[in-house]
Length: 89
Image 1 (spheres, one colour):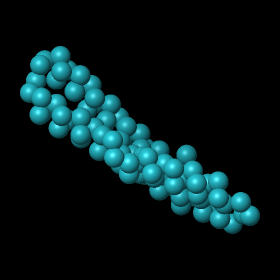
Image 2 (image 1 turned 120 degrees about the vertical axis):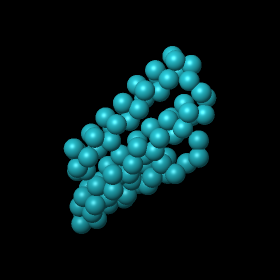
Image 3 (image 1 turned 180 degrees about the vertical axis):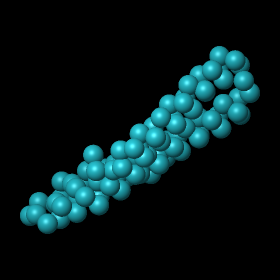
């Protein structure tokens, strides 16, 4: 992985903590909107981590592939991930 590992791991750890908190909120029968807000916050941090990884992939792996005769595979991989990131659930 070419992304800043510490940064990505920090975001994933934050999301894990948020998810643990959400599970406790559910067990404690907390207010629905509060739980939904926390789910959205977790989703947002995971999206930021995915963006960071994809950006690093494009800046390194795709850039390196462009110097070869066969860059299409790396470009298509990045485009598929980008499509998933922007698809509406």
